[in-house]
Amino acid sequence: MPVTLVVMCGRCGGLLLAKADQKTRTCPYCGSKLALDRAKKVASAENAYEASEILRKLKSDSSVHGMHVRRAEDL
Ligand SMILES: [Zn+2]
Image 1 (cartoon, rainbow, N blue to C red):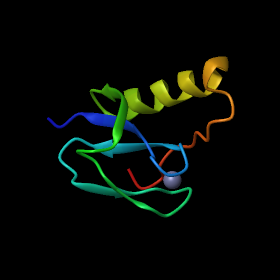
Image 2: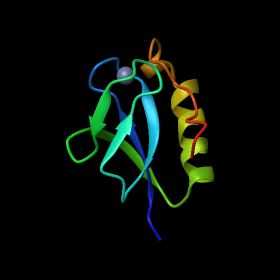
Image 3: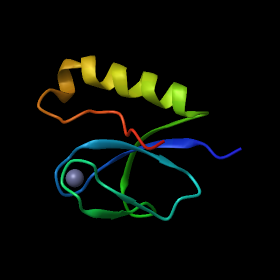
């Protein structure tokens, strides 16, 4: 079962979810296309639910204030 990754957009710093078997992902914030093998992986999760929980924790973490965090609706 593919894991869900939390990756950071290298262009705008936004966090988005991607499946581990995906090659590319379009950033929902700035529209840039990310190559997932080169993108910065913030976290990995067993499933989309766990990944969204991680996103929620990251969002509430004051050390990442200013970062755009939003769920990717198409997962
Ligand atoms: Zn972006």
